Length: 76
Image (cartoon, rainbow, N blue to C red; front, top):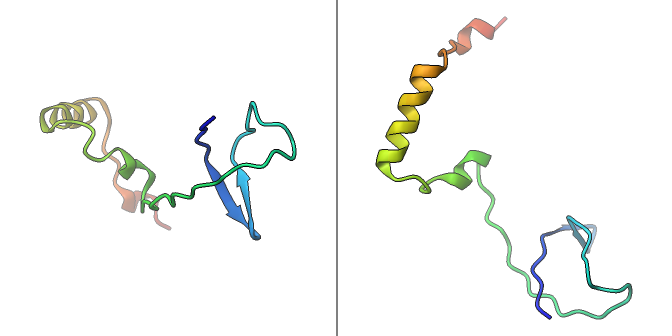
């Protein structure tokens, strides 16, 4: 059986992010590691998914529907 899981490496141990179904305790497994590239901002994971036309339509919708906020208004 081949199963892909996501895990985090902590204190010398790989810890699955979610419970692994169909594997009994103390079962020996073979592990292949692929290190995920860190993204500077979570939304950048979605960069390149939309076509230019779709992105333009989305930006127009955002501009039409949401009020722009001046970030300087929130400074003390």
